[in-house]
Length: 157
Image (cartoon, rainbow, N blue to C red; front, top):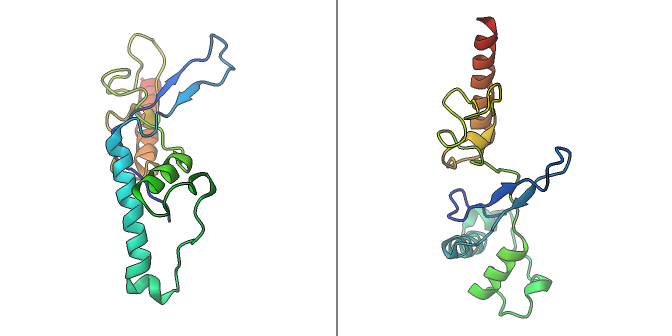
């Protein structure tokens, strides 16, 4: 099982590496810059342990937690808050759900056009002004469909 913070307080950033359009951008995730994010993940990990060890559903399938501490955190008391914090910091992933880098209202208008740059639109999850409380797949498809309709309508005029 994995924990996922759907509404993290911390924010990352995407910046250009240089003026070469072929250079990859610099992505700074800033995981756990917010203390509350780390506290929330520790709570979630402890809840997972409780689910696995105390619920009948997991007992019925003989689910067990790995009894071996994570090597980079084995200097801390196993299952302590400090251990869970260490584990969180070493085993964090984005699941490639970046969003909000070209927020509607700040960077693009309600027609997904980049403010101040004629002929450029952004049609993906980066336009979300707030992080959705769910997986980004469905809302990103919706933005793509709506963006396609807008572009088609523009060119049919």
